[in-house]
Image (cartoon, rainbow, N blue to C red; front, side):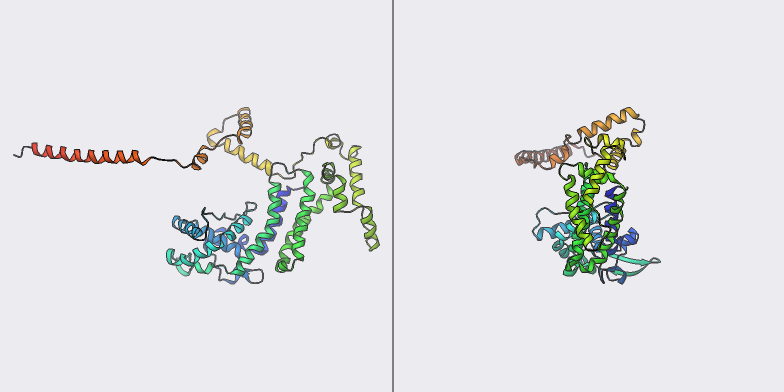
Length: 387
């Protein structure tokens, strides 16, 4: 079974493929040659590709210190005392699309204000060239998002919010087997509810793509009884979750009355898995330790984070540490990382109080020294023998 964090990311990617064309073009093209007026940059029934639009705006604004300063002023004019920065979406970073859309909508008034003045202050946002000849100038106003475009931003953000919450859960340090089934079922239920909502009618195909991908891996859990066993041993779920979510004898009888001859008593089936495990018929090792420890990771993210952290230690300048020293350094870093103070960040939070009287005295001394230098030069010139 694949890492469930990556499984959810695959579902989000399929959802994104219907909402934006950004994953189907090269990065350089998406950044430098995106033209909102072209028909191929329209998705979801002809609406503007808002993800590509916001991503391009974010890159262009952050490409210049003057633009960043002006964008901060636009935020200040809109009542934002502490200017914010729109995070950039990356296809390889989980949850980055949600973060970009959420922050962009919070700053949508400042973004609109920036675009309305950007052409006059900075010129066109980009220039398209072909064979070293200028083909077209694209103005900032071409990226102006109307009310219906911002509505698309909100809808896309809300859809991605469901999967982003799951990804954050699977990216934590304790994503164990017991939460796999309830979490995936929660994501499936959330997207199914959105399909039924008339507000998301235009996104039905989009949601179907994500649901099909998640369901593909969800059905594979049937082949892994350990995923069923883990929530049963959890003190909160046990067999009650199976009965509530999947049904027991009453639900089986009700389905048979409707003509479903293949209806199952899922609670009874889960109970049999527990009995078989306890009798060590299927998993002799798991049967010995299941009642004490269920730490099996459902996501490979913590392992990847550990390897990434180790790469920062075993760099090119420290390639001969040795296995024992390297192990000691990693253990020390993990033990101390939460207790080490970032003095630079701590100092930046404090405002240093400076007495201007000291500087005034220094300034007066500079003036006095300057006058003395002039007098010395005058005296030396008088003593010069002019012959």
